Amino acid sequence: MLSEFDLIKQYFVRPTSGRATLGIGDDCALLTPSPGMQTAISSDMLVEGRHFFAGEDAQRLGHKSLAVNLSDLAAMGARPVAFTLALALPAAERAWLEGFSRGLFALADAHGCELIGGDTTKGPLNICITVFGEVAPGRALRRSAARPGDDIWVSGTLGDARLALAGYLGELTLPADAQAAAGTRMHTPTPRVALGVMLAERGLAHAAIDISDGLVGDLGHILEKSHAGATLNADALPAGPVLATQPLALRRAFTAAGGDDYEICFTAPAANREAILAAGAECGTPVTRIGRIEAKAGLRWTDADGAPLTLELSSFDHFTN
Ligand code: ADP
Ligand code: MG
Image (cartoon, rainbow, N blue to C red):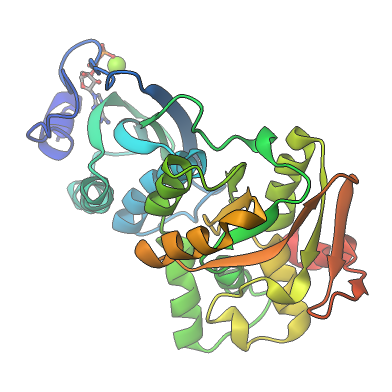
């Protein structure tokens, strides 16, 4: 039987990357901020039965637990530095711990983000990560910074994670290969860190948010904090490759209000269009212009020709509840 300390030592203590002044092993870790930089901090908790199904693959869970946190840093334009991990586990199973730490550290290493501490306890499976990042003063992409006239952009594609969930829940039936492809988006999201950092460091974007609860809801937070409204082009929303093969009503519902996408929705002056497309190309993350911020409150829709469209959000309820 693994003791708590053996478990930490075997699966979570690694040679220091040098990012932290003092890592795992004392009462606190010590971080020395880069001169003049601000620290961006965010926590996200993943609870079994609520955020993932019981029996979920441990390696994918390790990846996703950190990915959703890195996505918050990306949406702020902050570079990842370090993270802590608070873990409640029903039992200390070696196979689970090996898989979980493999998925976790593969993503952590890809972003130069060091595990510097945490807490471990017995209990229903629950994973809480806190990330620390750095951003220059005045450069963070805040929700309150959208301005009328800004373009609205989204990274990557939307809706495949929600489509996968629909398949798992039996709301619809997908061919096995399509279910697997969409499932990859749901289980192993890609945090758009390089893009977020470029947008912030180059001063290209005003406001940003990562899409965890669905585009409409998350853009709504930007609109509320910025005291603004928006018009979105329903036909411009980039559907994931699997969702793109589905009927129009489903494409619209799941791109607009799917959730679990971990793409970045951001606003930027029209003068930055070329530079934003170049930044997207440079970091290998496609970016799509989907609408415009307006002074008038509320969210309005058009089709590709600019004709007003009534997208009854209530009609999404069937899919989003
Ligand atoms: P304390 O009793 O002071 O809370 P612990 O005995 O819980 O400390 O933890 C010992 C050390 O191991 C601390 O440095 C803590 O940050 C670290 N630690 C505990 N659990 C984890 C974990 N799941 N991942 C990384 N570090 C951990
Ligand atoms: Mg403790």
